[in-house]
Image (cartoon, rainbow, N blue to C red; front, side, top):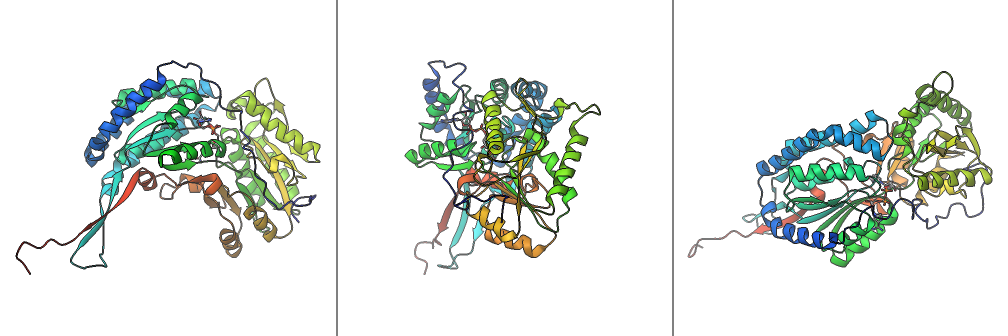
Length: 480
Ligand code: NAD
């Protein structure tokens, strides 16, 4: 059986309110009354310009991407400082996720766009003398909306793909990172004319105004709750969407797994951005026999990674919780779990004044606890025990499809069984995050965790329409 105590009906999925509901979107810091008219004006400019952008050559697109790269580099230090002003993340994490990754991503588009743009010839089955091909044509005018947890990187990845695919786009970063949004605006203005790419700063009302417009494609990264709002807005105009959403990503530890490795990987993964990553491992399934070893090894590893000899936390090495409402949300999940009988086995220190949560492992967890129902999005990990692997499979497959699934196992047959009987956006076996980092794989969710994918060529495709072109052989007049 899964969990130490099992309430009636524990297998039935419940429609879940999103954990971040009502918490993360603040009112606009500034709301100039002319924003909607400015949005309209730029939208009309881009609508007119899209046909020119669509016909741009690979070289012209590369040139745009080089301008973007140069602007990012020129504002690199300012950007790192801005992200750190908006979020207290370790500087090295910011450099890697918000700067180096963005540059590498732009470079990948520059290196490959020519190849990606080539039409794909297909064999004709109607008549062997005819010709047919698939043309990747720009979608047109796109809207790109991003989340707060990697506020620049998760917007610039899609922007680079949109440019490579020959689109115009309008962009808005989250209102929770105003300093980053401001620097991003400078970068975009330095690299592009507003008829190609334009960035709007502001709050949810700016996002709402943008969503009124008949974009050709909307690329949204954020919560499942707001993803529904975005998809409803897109439906009004039949815009295509890419939705990069969140959810509860489980970790299955098979009976033969190396528990020491699981603990070390888990400690590092939950430290990364303070567990505030869409693909962060959310909860862990282990056998009862493995549980004490996992708890012990996790405690040791966290101590090694994050504490001084005197026991004080090296707080510069773990991101703060982004804001007070999110801190209160995670505290509520922990309080509810403890009230229902869970045990804080590791950590549990919540420093409200500093919005710091020490890496925390919770045991004696049951499915009725909120911590097993809402995306945690923090450095907290509940541990559930199981007897048979099939119980875990049933548990996962009865719930919303997660963005990521992690399996630690040395038995290929078990890995295969899990893969066949569950669904998730992506999977990493015997590690964390690798399916995200591998740019030859599509990254995205499925149903509740998202729609569509990107990274590498998949980003180019997300921003392209696959147009079917069939050409009948034209015979010269009079020929037979
Ligand atoms: P969020 O959904 O609250 O906000 C995302 C964006 O939507 C922001 O730009 C915000 O300003 C805007 N927004 C908020 N309310 C809106 C509304 N009513 N109408 C229109 N726009 C609105 O998400 P967040 O808190 O910024 O990010 C955390 C969530 O994002 C988590 O669920 C996480 O799993 C998910 N996420 C997913 C990915 C991915 O690649 N799949 C990456 C990062 C984060």
